Amino acid sequence: MMSAASARAADVWRYRELLRGLVVRNLKVKYQRSLLGFVWTLVNPLLTVTILVVVFSHVVRIQVPAYWAFLLSGYFAWNFMLQTLTTGTWVFAEHSRLTRSVAFPSEILVFSAAGSRLIEFIAEILFTVAALVLLHHHGVPASYVLIPVLILLQAVMAIGLTLPVATLSVFYHDVYHALPIALASLFYLSPVFYPASMVPEAYRALYFLNPIAGLLTLYHDVVYSGQWPSTLLLAGTAAQAALCYVLGHAVFNRYAAVFPEVV
Amino acid sequence: MPSSTATQPSSPKSSEPGRRPAVELRGVSKRFYFYDHRTSSLREWFIRRILRRPIHVRRASFSLRDLDLRVDPGEAVALVGRNGSGKSTVLRLVAGIYRPTAGTISTSGRITAVIELGAGFHPELTGAENIRLYAAVLGLSRRELHGRWDEIVEFADMEDFLDTPLKYYSSGMEARLAFSVAVCLQPDILLLDEVLAVGDAAFRLRCLERLRTYHARGGTLLLVSHELEQLRELCTRGVWLRDGGVVLDAGIDEVLAAYRVEHPPERSA
Image (spheres, rainbow over the protein chains, first blue to last red):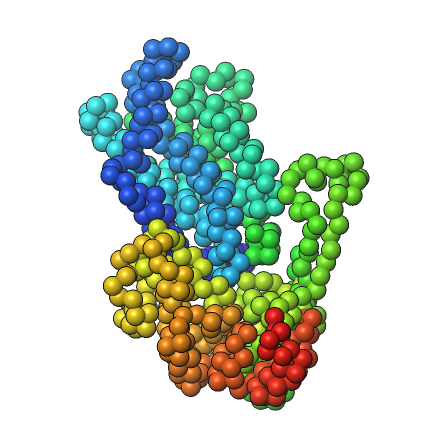
């Protein structure tokens, strides 16, 4: 099994130029002909963040000091997962012509969806770091050194979740109908606009079965609180991300060979 | 699911002992499933499984049956046959796009398959950007593309248009662009699936010339085309497929003559 996995990895590496080309293409096409261009990647989520801050500070009052900083620290990571899952699920149908006529490891399509989103995320997280360093922490907390690790975790997790969903969508179009509902529910079941500490103790273990819960809490700890996260949380979320990836890729591998015939 | 995997190294055989074939298919069968209604929703699965009511019939169809084919390095082979005879399936199997249902396929050397011209082209990107992307699709590294860039641009003869988005190209220009990338590759084995009918007469001549040069340099060619005259000019050997099996495997003139008897030009599909 290991040699099969490394053979696939070698295959993906051989087509890295294609991966790069697709990521560049995704970004170019998305921001073509727009005046603000790349700035939109920030404007859109920031508008949502502003509305959420207003609502959850002044209407439904969540008791979190500097709520804006709290929300900002985790929101972009959530947005990354959301967007990767949404666009990533479509990739195989979208690229049916390519899949049918070229022999390439098709997981590259999902990687490229995650990859272009990741580049946007890096711009977003830099903005977040700048904003929090200047306006919240008034300095750079030592914990920020962990941010690249969190980014890696979220990328692995996102791909691990998207691969099986996208694979299933090739055979069952119900996925396209179910996905928006699932993601909307996930928004409430993840600590996006509220901290995980608000979840009653009795349900917390269950709550953290959701890998996104762990990921976002890590972001809250590291970026908002400026603290080193608990080892348990870090290790647990890393394990969840790895598990998602291994299982997700396994599901994909099981059916990928037939894609050129059915897509 | 396929029971055997493709691309295992094979031992040299029979006619040329010690010489590894470029492409070898042994006992290859390929079965496709056709659904009268694609099971594309849980509702249909539910009706079929739980309520046990037949909602569709699943037909299996063999596109290829127990096919043997061997191509030695440096050969230029034409695959002819009616639509549906399995020619494209053979190319896709050799390229590794499909997996065989039975049998083994082994290849030696770098393969580039041009099955659909311009797969991966995006209308919003410019000609130059699409060249880059298409080259990556065909497996070219950045360094290789850099080395070939001038050659590709010169061959396409569209330098003024390279910074224009592809959606403003005519379909002929688009095809020429794609073909220019494909034809400037230097793989060991080149597979072309009905891509020769591209561009005007002058362009076609250049394509033929380029392919001839490729072959002369020792490249292996496996072509599917309905342009029988072009096949005669490029290939030395022809393989006539019908209903997933080989009818005739001989010199190109012999095969084309026999094929023409069965399928006179006016009616050839």
